[in-house]
View (cartoon, each protein chain N blue to C red):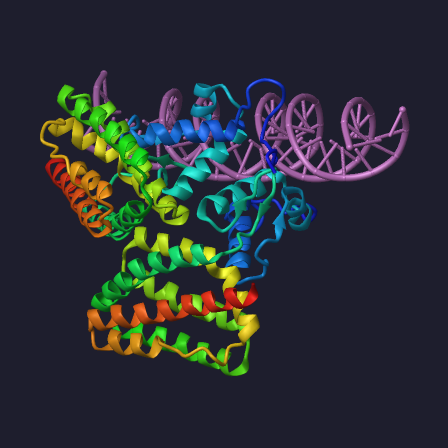
Length: 226
Length: 226
DNA sequence: CTTGCGATAATTTGATCATATTTTGCCGGC
DNA sequence: GCCGGCAAAATATGATCAAATTATCGCAAG
């Protein structure tokens, strides 16, 4: 069974459907803070900006709203959600409940190459922090956690966590823009050490510290913003 | 001029958009097991069955796929997901992590009327169990948990739990259809007692037992099905 | 005479449908 | 058994209709 239903489309490059491309582009823009919290999003504005029909845009927006990355603000207005303290509290509880478990599972099945790849990402992350490159930091930080979670081989839990990230992504950008990247201590080293030694409990504990610290940063940044 | 030929939107008191109505109808059908796991769903089949255009159907399906109630099975096939043991394991972990926390919060702010309403629902639930009415049992059981979660006043966590229910709903129906409703011990009494006495820890523990037991039922039912 | 308020018109946005285009699975012919 | 055409299903576009927000104009009060 080597040739099982290859999703090749047409003769040229296999291009994803338009609604999928629109979805991914908007999701990345939300995830990495290219939209400010509270910024309104309109269907027709996106159709004009992206040069596609309105049906794919509608589907992408509906999907993003279902995932929490966008919010329907009543009266025909779709916007990037603005986090308040209660939302941060709930997101913290959910992250603490799920991400350490994923780290625990990842520690069981992580190969040496996996750890090497994560270490390389973490090196890029440190570099971005030193340079003060907020955008790069956000991308690499997400890549670290996303790659780590994929190692856990738990698609349902991973998908839940991905949606949580979509919710606090925009605010993370705002917070980093305020305090810069220098004051971000890095708990990833502990996670990597635990993965190397296959210590599942240590990986879970290190991840819980990383999550707690990150959400605390957001909490303080939002409190300062009031 | 009265229009009786076309169900125009402005004519009746029906203010919900078509895609919303289609979404809710399909979601309830999935939640209460009116679709079997693995059953394929086509866009054109739904447009024909529901008598609406395909754009609202597309949006409803996209939303349900984002929420985990439907799955894209490659090659343009959309189907109700079939749970395997690993999926049940992940769903159990997520439910145990979230639902006791919601019960804990509900216990803090539950009023006497709230407890009374939940008790009434639980009475209906017991009645459904005695009669062996599986459909009624599923509806009332969901209503009990849904009402309870709404008391916690934690919309993000509640939304996450709602999606978990969407995932195991169809399989719950299959399991209940196999073993009937007689063998379902009811942990809800412990939850209600904890709510009455405002004991948050007891509510969380009782909810954890209820969740663990329910998922264990599903696990055994699916294992028997292999 | 200026200014504030309310009603109406106009523009913008969203929702739905019908249709054309593309892709895929299937079936019959070679 | 392999290849090419056929049909069905899904994707994408544009058009059309409904609703809401905004802008404008007129009237009245200070």
